[in-house]
Image (cartoon, rainbow, N blue to C red; front, side, top):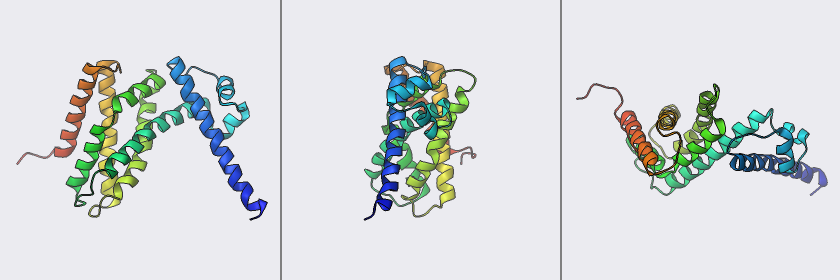
Length: 211
């Protein structure tokens, strides 16, 4: 194997390592300070890279922060994958698929993730759009994952179903934050369970006239 074929792979691996180092550093600084209050210079120093390297991977400090949030939510997607893989594939129907999705969502510790995201994004004028954007970024990943479990419904219906649940979770999160201040205790988790239960019931039954 020649050096020409090895070098691009090594270069790609190095870039990936730098990117992860930057995101790890951002996450560590956020945890230490409670909010994303740091400069590019501080981030670069913590990641042991140059300021230029930060901007080689991200368009701005906001982009770093949003990607850090998305990566945290991607961890939830990984938990979701593990939960769905542990559940036997049903008959591929819409009803079974919905049950699989909602069961997995109920098994994941979403309040902890939402509290983290809210601590990062804060409550300024941009926060709601940013918060919703983090959830939106997860929809495509989940749609692909869920589509593999269904043999009877097409990609469009899968995307609609997943989008309904994920966007619903964003609404649940907003109401949960308003009611609890994103604190994490038994009472706030009860509020989360109540709101999540209402979301699931609403999506399941829809708005048709009862028979």
